[in-house]
Image (cartoon, rainbow, N blue to C red; front, side, top):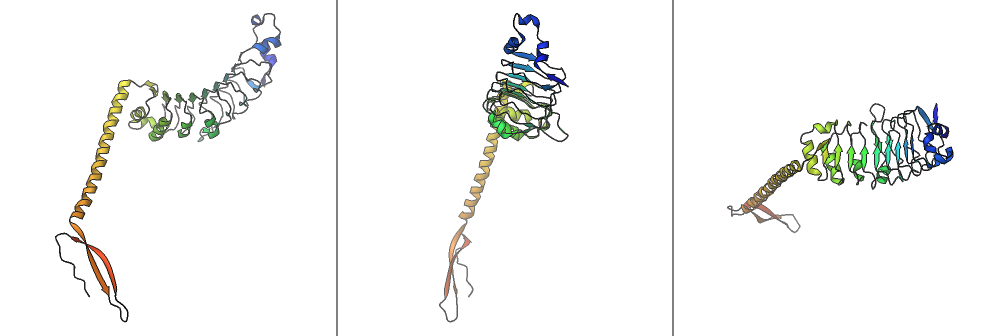
Length: 309
């Protein structure tokens, strides 16, 4: 078992950078640590490194995020390709801007409340049990609504992303190789994400749907790149004109149907009229009851119908 300790950090310090400083003095000033691909299992107490801003720990064997509460100046944290199953102990990292957690065992995006500076979240390719998909805690999504700009959720067996509509400041969404199926859901999402300029959904079944690209381009005026291909202004203008023409024809057809229905009602009433009719019901030993009602009769039939006594 390999632990990331202060001793291990000290052993990897370039002596030429220390000058006349002691190890402790140098550790207090250090801002970047790179211990990627070192078979590390556990993060030990590194609280001396109070000015740490960037920490590289990818390609290790870390199973829990521990002992990072001291790193209040941390802005970049690289933990991809470890064995982390739970997003925990991150709330004290108030200045964190970029979080890389791809290639772990995480099933739920959660526990990021309070990270008001987080702009990028990379959580692609989680090693989930067969049939399971990556889920999102609504509280976490809501807490990231004002800050998150880039989200990578590729290759996580996700089949719906409508819940991401709360991320109103999202500019880039990477969700390749998932199970997204419905164009309509994407249209509704794009309607909410008015700042999104780049979206990549390659490898999803929805990409094979008829008019998939056309419909998304028409729905979002902010989108500049879809599935790795730039959207040219002439392409968008053509599609906008096509949609306007299609909508005009649809509205005209609807209007004609309503006019036809109205005409039919008027024609029916013009050839029929309501005629009053009365029926007296004789009752032995009692006053007669008289019923009054209307019957419909063609206008060219002027005689009252005979009432059989």
